[in-house]
Length: 336
Image (tube, rainbow, N blue to C red):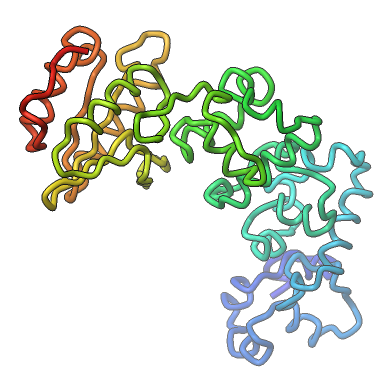
């Protein structure tokens, strides 16, 4: 087989694969060695090769942190990588090129998890070129990222409310898409989740408080909120109390309001920046939201656009509510 495949003896560990052995009718012999080319080759040629000669390691090899640590440190030293450059150097492509696919698989394809295992607490996620798929789906990862980011930059309790979109656009833009996806663009929600030991006042985030104590992001939302609280008959009006996940676009949506009345549910959303040329991304995401909300069988969407509020006031909003089946006080004022 080696002659047919033109493989030199010293290249056997790296070039002889399971597929090659099966192709040359060694499948029965492989089964006696747990389908492991490494074990089969070591059986045929005892003491000729060490584990380091093989790309593929024996089952359970990467579960031993000593083996993981040795492989990573050897790679760093061999390539002369400076300590501060390790996160940028240690990419998925680099590890695969070094024959460490099995190691990657053991750590869910994440160089970040490998480096954390080898050097616990030494580096944070912001130092790596990119995070693995699904990394931000974990609330723990999102919380740890912000806490580490703040700790390394000396950002204390009083400065936290200033961490908004404008701040991260200037200092660390990579966080913006994560907040857009998982907190519906609401940075204060990320901050509050990440620092539960602190109590924040609404005004610190420029939030407004409705007549029932629920929080609103803008004066327009506050007016709509208070109107709904006063005028919806025998129903429950909840502000930002639900989370929906749009799997197609990997986005989390938090409706402005969910109204429950007479066994039915409505999502009421105010798209205050819809159509803005300055915030094109907002309109694009709003369109995805509306499409997603319309797909929910248990909810009816009521979309309030800027013109509905600013030009026609509550008269248009009343019409939207009534036409979609929500009962409101018939004597309610249409004046703001």
